[in-house]
Image 1 (cartoon, protein in one colour):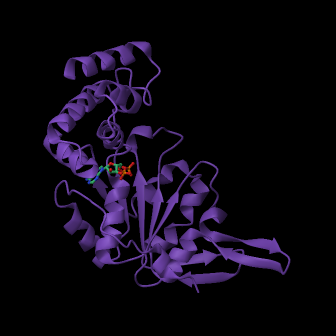
Image 2 (cartoon, helix red, strand yellow):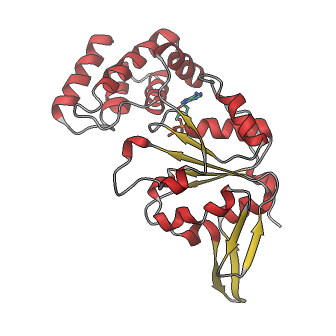
Image 3 (cartoon, helix red, strand yellow):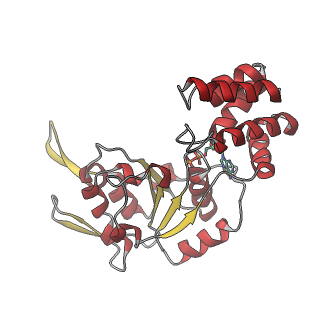
Length: 266
Ligand code: ADP
């Protein structure tokens, strides 16, 4: 038997609600509806799911999806060891057995055949067929499936099929407004609100460049990095260049624009 306590979140994660998403998630969970959390990278999707798992007191199993991921990586496979062959459950199977919330992060990265294995878990059947093992799992009553999805990365080649999308309820996340984001970054890092407000301002300059040379703006995650560096006595200019600008672009013009914004702000 898997020890489900290892997947429980012990301490309350800090999560600042943007609107009424906590109550809405609770309603979805009460009815075991699958949930999709949409939004740009680093805007709080994973933190929200972690917080909800903690609040509901349920174990959380997170899988970071990638393009090499196969259905077996989710469901499980036979392994060969000294004792012969042995079946090893994948994370989705473990979650269905123990009644965890299974969070598939960036599901759109995974190959399309991978997404099909989640289908029977998302409707009234709540089952997971382990074809190779010849077993049909009936999900534990506490099991819930959650996926995240960044619509910005979506291309014709990489998008969820309607038949997958239409199995989920969805939350639309975005970077919080300036006041709320300042509160979040200040609380998360302990940096004073005045300095954080300046970081948020620079973040918003970059977000306005999205589509004009930048694929994505500066995420809340990067603002947290910059604030952490400043808190550790790195100069604001260095911290901003290192955490906010260098990671997101190699374009000289955009770098210059952002570097100017930093010098003008600090
Ligand atoms: P993603 O949307 O990529 O899953 P995360 O949930 O990992 O992003 O968020 C990145 C970081 O931003 C978190 O580690 C946290 O520091 C911060 N963050 C973003 N939004 C919030 C929020 N609403 N409450 C608390 N922290 C947040």
